[in-house]
Length: 86
Image (cartoon, rainbow, N blue to C red; front, side, top):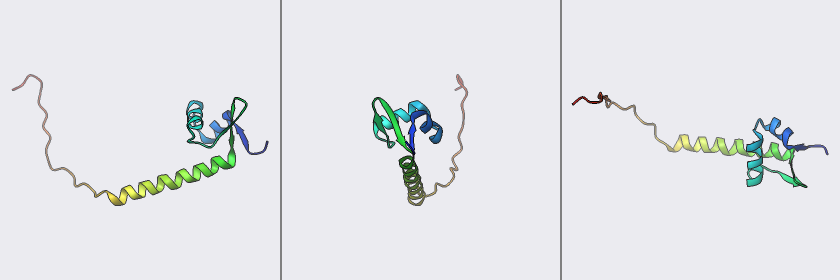
């Protein structure tokens, strides 16, 4: 079937380990379905999932950068003590 990937193909396409791919499929993180006992992945659905992740991750980084004030460098000196010294 055109556009349907086996687990091995999806791993190569996503550059993801088989363990991670199966965990994401099982937990509903990544779009997948089972035929018999084998996981299958629709390539178009994976592409949509990737695009959504890019948008969400970009928005989260953008929000993080605009809501957190920049910290001034610390002027406090750190001192180290040797063990056994008083």
